[in-house]
Image (cartoon, rainbow, N blue to C red; front, side, top):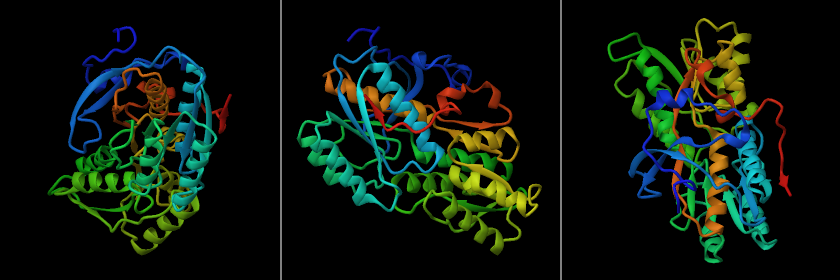
Length: 358
């Protein structure tokens, strides 16, 4: 393996990352990322690296990609990443989506169908951290690479992971708020909406957020779990606002933040209640631009999708695979918004869902 094929070098700090551009889809790399050693460990050593994918696949491999749903712009961003990287590498791709986090059996069935039709590799955005373990074991036993993207799967049979630590995402959001209300400072009440109960990424984000606000002047209410559909999140936000007229912050999923903007404005609470998400979507980005959302950590979901496709192709071709890697996390607010490369962290505004690359 030559340095021209893959470069793994220690990189500069996060400030350099913020200034790094991606002028065209074809030259998104090398990309500032973090790898974990040993792979798949919760407490592994994290190293800052530059990720560079293959120039081209050696043949037109057939990839199956499974998402929990396509109901929000976050997964649209991951879709953009996997689709564009499949095109760049010259491989086929079929994407299936299960319709929501309550549909684990449907996701399992869809992946089984992919394998039955002859998919060479499977990329999974998991509905459940543990509920797919048996399926992963079965698929891996057939020598079919399985890549864990975005959400996290607790299986030792995976080929690789392309994801960030949602613990760090939650921690980054909590830390941002805690700095505004340090111990002994002005108290403030926070409504917390971490997402669908039982999902691995949700539990990780919840743990990180709770750790970050511990010891601060923030009072975080009991978490309100719910599906990441706008209607479900809007109802949760309405209920918390109704029961807590002294609420200062709404923090939670990107869908929560997007839904909360209209609710806060309708109730004329813009000067009283501020909104924060613990990950980025186009709606959150726009909300930050307009001053309606204060901040959100960016996990570069587009690049996570791209890396997952590259990992799958590398595994199929017997080439070196970085088994556990994800983009470096940083918080975006109005102060640094203009210095962030948009197409690294979000899909273009004109992008529509794509389910097939031939």
